Length: 353
Image (cartoon, rainbow, N blue to C red; front, side, top):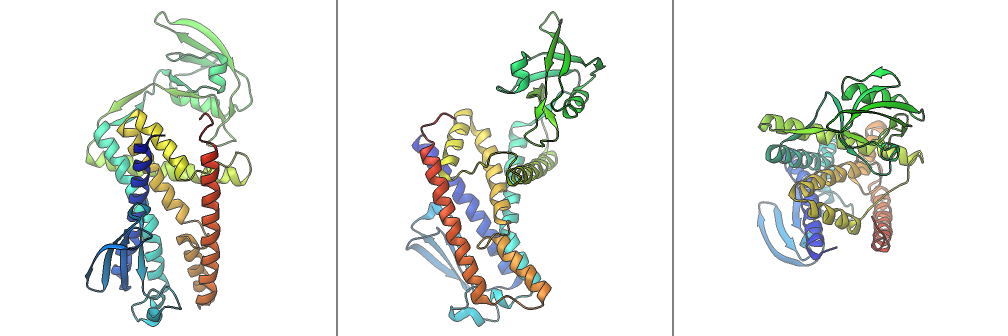
């Protein structure tokens, strides 16, 4: 793993966190919450600062570690807790907007990154017909059965296959069932018969998959098409994340968590392939940051939103000191989890990927 990959990883993470905090900042200003400090850098002494209005804007020593927004009314032990413009004095809906704005900005950034990709490089569009195989994924049933790139599937178990949609429909409905494929191979279109048994799909274990991708072509799109593509890809990334989380919780797939070291390895692999994969990975990471922060875990935005939901139902807030203590415990546990993941990442540096 090169030094440039490490620096790029730190830069990407810093941008994602800063965009997240900027969302909180904008929303807080919009609903009238007093913001005492907006910091570039999560820890360390101030390197530079200036004040505009009520807010001090600072740059701290560990600038690559993101940033934070310090609002009045967040800590009952602070003297500004009773400030009329404090966070705690706002109605539930306003506080919910402030909390949700951070993850929302991460989703918007993901849409922007995907849109830039579409505008700069075009959109990869699958060739619908004929059902021609463009790529074989190693280690999956199709590779083991002897499929080759360029094979054109004409029928499966005697059922005609006119396009890629036909092929997908049959495979998805045939998990653990042996299928007989008739394909045309090579320039001579030599008829070939292959038998393969679809395994459980990683996206949905109830469906079958054999590990093939269609032939694609690049289509240029305008600004509107780029934005639609960005929104679509962000939605796909979000649904895929929830599906994977569900599979992990159901113990149908192995839990795979990575920290900064693991992300650096992914960034290194993306850098080796070019700028587009780096931008793609950044978009995925931005959406992931937004999703993780929405989890109902203490210390995360989702955990604070959960307390607001309780307040809405009860008609009164949870005791602030008790809530802050719960968030403190949650923060400590998240730090321990982060250290454990980082340790696992470092121990796995010598293993092949």
